[in-house]
Length: 69
Image 1 (tube, rainbow, N blue to C red):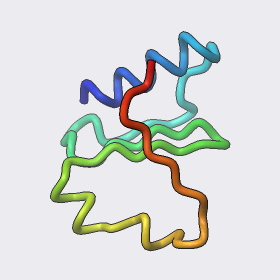
Image 2 (cartoon, rainbow, N blue to C red):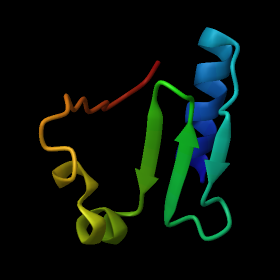
Image 3 (cartoon, rainbow, N blue to C red):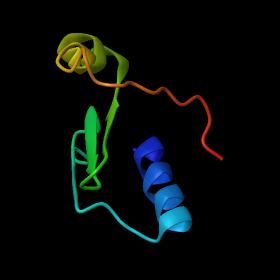
Image 4 (cartoon, one colour):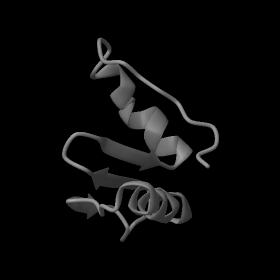
């Protein structure tokens, strides 16, 4: 929850936009933030391992971010 809110706040501060669609705040296991061109998936560890969505788009460019400032 706090990671997703931080992403929303950071994107708004830098770009002035809120997500077009968001879901998952209810159960806080997998939160999706849809910005049209970019979709952020924020998982708890067990859900990330179970769904392994990185494998669905094996040919897509993947970037990991340690700290967004």
